Amino acid sequence: MEIKSKSWKESYTQIERLVLPADTNVFNALYGGRLMEWIDNVASIVAFKHCRQGTVTGSIDSLFFLAPIHLGFIVNMKGRVNYTTKTTMEIEVDVSAQDALSGKERFTTKAYLTYVAVDVDGRPSPVPGLILDDDDSKDRFKSGEERSLRRLELLKSVKKEAQIFDDMH
Ligand SMILES: CC(C)(COP(=O)(O)OP(=O)(O)OC[C@H]1O[C@@H](n2cnc3c(N)ncnc32)[C@H](O)[C@@H]1OP(=O)(O)O)[C@@H](O)C(=O)NCCC(=O)NCCS
Image (cartoon, rainbow, N blue to C red; front, side, top):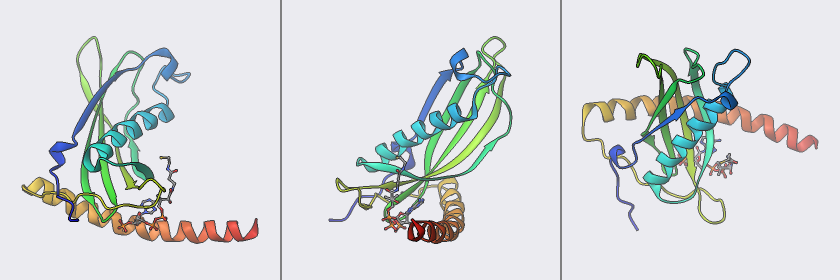
């Protein structure tokens, strides 16, 4: 059965979080690990909405922390699908942080995550393609394809390393 392609708009997700003391490090700034968890959560929602089946995080690459996010700031995360293959989705999450008192906002973080759709047995399963109906979607798809090729090269070498480790244990 052919799977119908979908627009990125059907899975676009925006979430806001307030940085509380339990989320911070000794410098009163948001823990990198906490932000990674929030980013993974946003991207998981995007992945579910796009393919409406089980998904797992395959890889997280190009996670850039450009500026610290302080206690009491409002964190805004926007996630969208850029690129798909037969069974994977590349999801971009852009993060900005707003000073809750002044309203001043800064772009702080960008991440690209790849999710693999899986069936009930955990095996990769086909996902809907993307409808590319404007120049921005086309550009994002093309850049996603380029990142995917680089990612696959890296995945190949990591898998080789994993095989050597597994063979020794
Ligand atoms: C991701 C996973 C399902 C892939 O299974 P696999 O048998 O290696 O899959 P395949 O080699 O057949 O690859 C299937 C597709 O996924 C891609 N892929 C596989 N592993 C990937 C990874 N780690 N990162 C990005 N893409 C990956 C392949 O390129 C392929 O893409 P395609 O749609 O273009 O064909 C499996 O490695 C797994 O379960 N990993 C653990 C996931 C996990 O625990 N995540 C954290 C918690 S959610």
